[in-house]
Image 1 (cartoon, one colour):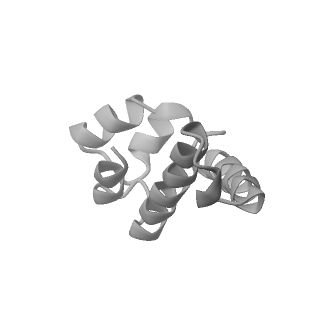
Image 2: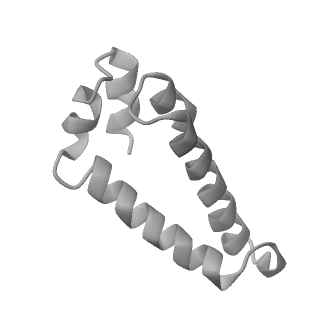
Length: 82
């Protein structure tokens, strides 16, 4: 879904890569791989996600995401899954 949302312009390629990196930190934590991240990584992840929500979701809801330059049916379908 991350790649699809970037492809249709909901967010850019850099944001897509950042989401992928954050997912790696989350997965490492969820699987107890403590040597693969630092506490600072988790703090940064929380800050970044908070900013992402404020930018992309807080005042727009799911319909705002789809309307933000991504009017295709695929974009609306992907945004609805968030």
